[in-house]
Length: 429
Image (cartoon, rainbow, N blue to C red; front, side):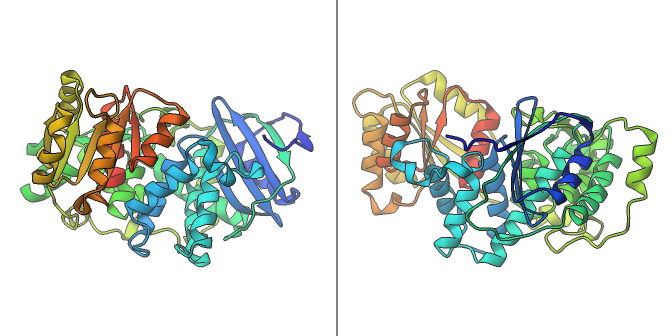
C-alpha cells in the first residue's frame, strides 16, 4: 500500500526543466508525477537528486546498466541479473519481505540495495549505477512538452543512498546531451528506436565486408539503449556513429517498440527562444559516469571488438505452430535452433546437443514443463544453463512453480519477436 501523500502541489503550467529546478528547495522525500500512462519519481535529499525512475520497464533499465557494469564487476552476470528479477520483479507472496511500502514504485532500487548489502556492489560503484539511471530518466523527462504536471509529495526516503547529484549541474550536462540527440533528428528521434541493417552492399562502401556482417548480427531488433549495454558504449555515441549508415539507406530505423513508444521524442519542433537557451547553456565538463561521444572510436572498431558465436538454442513445445513461430523469429545465422515436440525424448536430445539456452513450454502432455525442468536441473551439465519457461499464464502460482522447478526466467504467450530477442539478450549476450 502506498504511503499517504502529505502535501499536494497545485497543477500549473510549467516546463519539465522548471519543475526539476524547483526540487532544489523541496523537502526531503519523493515527488511523483504522472503524465499520460507514465509514472515518474524523483527522490530528493538535501536539495539534491539521490534517485530517479519512471514506470516503463524499470527492471529492463536496471538490467541494462548492470550489464554495462559487468565489465568492471564480473559478478554482475546474467545468472545474478536473473536472480534479481525473480526476487524483486515477481509479485509472489513468498517474496513479500522485499516489498517495502515506501519504495513500492521503484522496486528496482530495492535490488540495488540488496546488491550492496550482499557485497556484489561497492557503494562507489552503486553510486555510478544510480547516476547513470538518473541521467537516462531525466533525459526522457526533459523531452516532455510543457504542461500542468500533477505532482504529489511523499515524505519518505530511500533506505540508503549512494549518490547525491546537484540538480542544476545535472540539467546542464543533460541539456548538452539532448542538444546532441536533437541534432540527429528528425531521422533519429529517440534512444529507443531500433536500427536494422537492410543493405549490406551499400554499407560495404563505408566498411569492410567482415564488419558489415558482424554489424548485421548485432542489429537484430535492439534499440540504441540496449545496443549501448551490449557493446559497452554510450547510446548517443552509437547513434552518432550509425547516423551516416542511416542517411545512406544501409540501416533502417523502426519506431520504438511498446512500451517505449510512450516516451517523448528527443527531436521536436521547439520554440526558437528555447533552442537558443539550450545552445547558450554554460560549458560544463561531462561527469565520469559518461563517455564523451566525440572521442569514441569508430563504429567499425566497436563492431569488430564484439565476440562472434553461434548460440545453440533448444525449443521444447508440443505445439508445431509455436515451434514454427520461434524458429522464424530466430532464423538467423548466429542461432542454431533445435525444435523438440516430444517432451519424452527431450532430455536425451538436450544431453547430446548441450545448448546455451532452453525455451521450455509448460503445458505439455506426458511430462509437463515443470517436471522436465526439474529433470534437466538434476544433471550437473545443466545446472547453470538458462531455462526460460514459456507460458500463457501470468499468475503468481505459475511463476512460483517455474522458479521452484529451477527455471531461470519466464516468457508469456503471446510474445513478439522483440520480446524473444530481449529475453535472449538478457541471458546470452
